[in-house]
Image 1 (cartoon, rainbow, N blue to C red):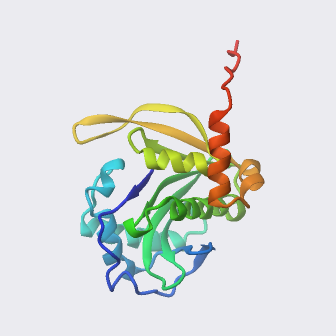
Image 2 (image 1 turned 180 degrees about the horizontal axis):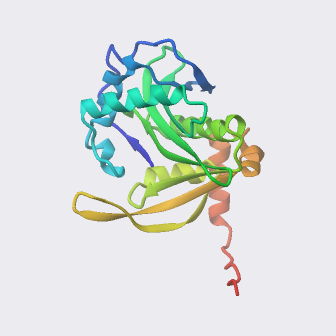
Length: 226
């Protein structure tokens, strides 16, 4: 799921650039490991009820965010690590811009739990770059065959971004999680390694043009399995 936060700009704490291993770099953004000093800036994001409206957990308390960062640091030292909770930072100044979580599964697959960006970066350009960083992590670093995402049915921004990034809508999972007194449906999106490599060079403009072309093509029904 992709979500955005309230319109607060990064705090002074968020603009600190702690020494941490950089996992993947793009033109304007990078993925790096979390460090303890990220907790304050991260809590501004994950503690916002508006941003968390598209997540299964809802807004997180400060203590819960501190625990999350501690767990992320502990996971970094695990040789059998399957979950990668990473900071999204701006390359220009190291400011914390958001977070992503990916988890390696069976059958050469990675699930991206979320991509969260601050509002001054919550645009299709930054979202596209972040999604490409996640794909590069999955296919180049973790060397899996399949990357998939889930987006709440009312999270239209995330759905549009996944499609622009080359993912295929594979269907809807009904009543996936319970929050705020109701069950929520989610859409599933998947991209395979060879599909990503064939289009990894595309700019955002080229990716959107390709998506619009695909949307205008007549749809054909797949034959039913027997």
